[in-house]
Length: 147
Image (tube, rainbow, N blue to C red; front, side, top):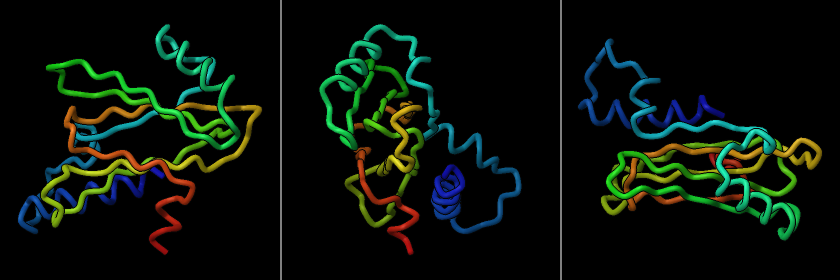
């Protein structure tokens, strides 16, 4: 899952670098400046606001339904988004950059991939604070779409 995202970021960095070889580019560090994510146990959520949002999503939503929560602080460099898919315990999260699309900085594609309502999890996504980044919540993983 992270490997696909890293491969897409590498392609992005390769294009930006003018297709030249740069041995000192550390892909992990470069990717974390744009996008990073962590999957958490539902019970490990710390913030009261997120706990309240998540509790509401768990009690009112239908199986397989997506819920999102975004923590945007004006003037901050990063936005933190939370995605929960009711009944799912794993997620595929990918960053997609299309150089031909000048209207968007990129897309973050999220798919709940493991239906396990006993061990539900939530994904926290850290991305640059830019309104042109689009979120795609999908039933089909990006890996399957690329086949």
